[in-house]
Image (cartoon, rainbow, N blue to C red; front, top):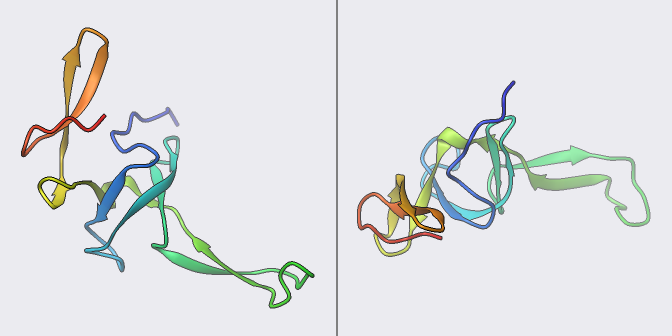
Length: 106
């Protein structure tokens, strides 16, 4: 599989638009461009069973599972909703901008 170019970056705030967490917002912890997936803080939680240890006496871990990037949208704080991102070219490179209000993201 080739590496996909994603507009969502680590640290962005995103809104979930599909799935069991629909309507919730959170911060992106990790981006996996080769799998086209993102991990969002405290969303899409799953339980993992591990052998009990001194650090984990219960033997169960709860952590975030990756979700497909098509199920999230960038959350614009100025628009207060999920928005599409466009790219604006400047002399130093490229800037991501909100398609609705024109706010520069980076």
